[in-house]
Image 1 (tube, helix red, strand yellow):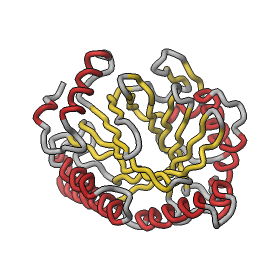
Image 2 (cartoon, helix red, strand yellow):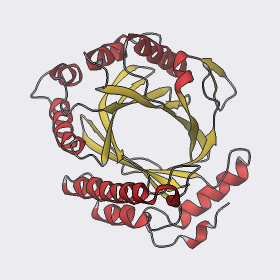
Image 3 (cartoon, rainbow, N blue to C red):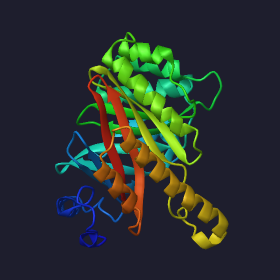
Image 4 (cartoon, rainbow, N blue to C red):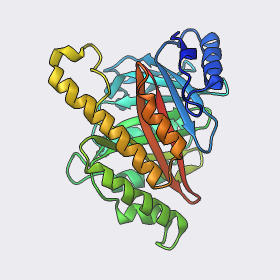
Length: 309
């Protein structure tokens, strides 16, 4: 395990409580613990700590942490790694990433099938309605990027990479009913601000739809992340193409600054967290995963996803 105690300048994002929690998890789950550590901190929830583990790719079968085997055509498009996240010492979330299959009828069917498997809810009509509204007339507006699965919470959060700089009025009405409701106004306000970040080529914007055992969760989230990683891609070095490396390195830093600055200016993130997430990247192997803003009836909630790789 990497020397976590040497990381000591982040009272909010990485303190002694975090170090102790990660070490305890590593002792409890030695089969999955490694130096690739993920952290999710929220302004409204208990922190989660996770580890990156490899998964088989190119097959329609996936083994959940519980040992249960799932079958779904979407599993063919899994990327090489997933994250297992633990809350209070219990594994709660399996976060999968995909090679961006398009949002079309067959993949909507597959998402609804996956939602039933994870949540136990066989009535996925409300989820299907949202996905069919988002289904683009031309490929490319929305692609399936992530799935955050929680068998414990009986919940699935579906991440769709968003290229369009607008949100459909039909979506706002589906979630908020009328334009004078708080949920309508909150989702519209957050969506409008988030859409300004799509125009910047350094940034990625992922729309997050949640479905659970009771149906569609009346919230919409946006995961704001960087187009490129801070360091050279796995299996390469900066010297392989130093000019490209420099361009992507600068793009990453610009994106993190852009996202965190705007999150603070729009009152989604505290100034303390904003300063620390920018400084975080000075650590060797530090990773900025995403800044997630979720809008619902009660306003917004913030999640920071970061770690070491």
